[in-house]
Image (tube, rainbow, N blue to C red; front, top):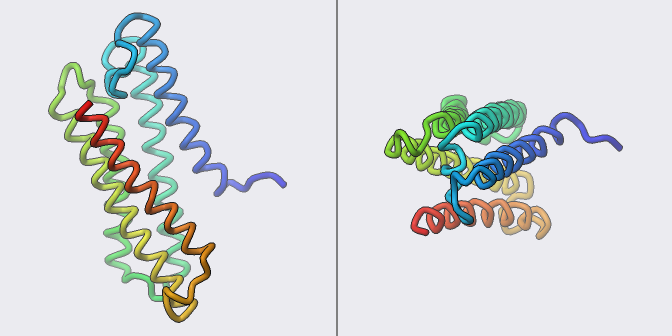
Length: 183
């Protein structure tokens, strides 16, 4: 069966993120603008790779914002049965996520070579905000599972494995970002 639009959007986001970074780093390495193991931001310092880096990651930021909005709508549709979060908290949750997507776009647009402090601040803000968003999302999903099953301890192992996998990737993203920066 073909994938639905809701399934294609995360895959497209991942494809464009990896593609934009790979192409911009490939161009930068080919032109001798960077060394063998650069920080990702270095792949967007000079032209022409700067254009691929900026456009691609701005597109990724837009796709992330679309995904977050779809999640917001899904949570809103479930809110009347599960009482997952208040409308104000749900709006805050969406605002945190969209702010992260905006920070990603700003980080990609502001070259680290010309404006290192704003670039790094946007990158840190992106990671912090997306982790806060994911933390709220994880809490909401675990709460929904607990409501449906009566207790979080009554939830099947496959459902908890999915949430554990999400938590693992959140922590791996944070650790990877920190280790990359101190490299």
